[in-house]
Length: 264
Image 1 (cartoon, rainbow, N blue to C red):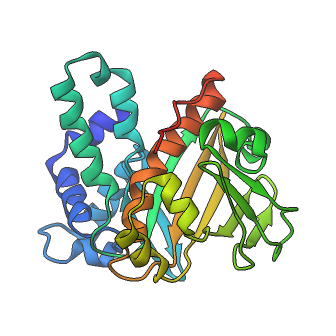
Image 2 (spheres, rainbow, N blue to C red):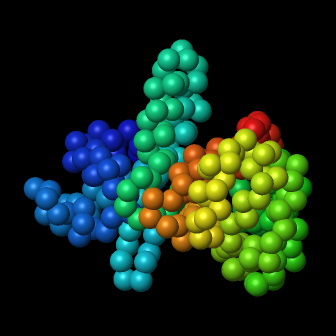
């Protein structure tokens, strides 16, 4: 956590975070544009922010895209601010929302967290229904072979669709699958109205990818949810939901007790 405060102490690094808050998913070249800083200086500042986990990066071909990462903000909330008044907690929630939403820039959600566990245990937590039910409230019926269908269980509803499939399955390293279908039954259980359901059902199906990397005694987990259309409503919804799910996953693996699953 000391790294986070040291990173935020520099006004140039705060300015870079401000630019990513306006438009997420920028390359080094894009971040340098309009700044009175040498490219090398911007690169060094970004390295500090990435080391503090305030910025997450994703490779797209030869390009490296930079994203705001809300995980350190969640950690600050867990450590201190929840001890103070509701007004201060609400102010933090507003800040977290600004960091987690992606109204502009690349249409994808990126989140990186470090978990005190092993790749094997984290992998089980991502694939075993006994685990996913505890921190997510969702389960998967699948043999996890690439191309196999996935039946989702969520909010007491079973969601089956041939287009819900496993895309990648590299144990302890990388897992990817398409997102579930938005059925009327699911929407009713989740508290989604007819107008929003019609909007998200008309969007193309997105996908989520989990990448696990050993990091000393920790495991670095990067979640990328992408393949959205520009201005996607689904992106707005998952950007609000993923931080809660991943915070609960981390808490479960590190303490044995997940955060309460939000009820619709």
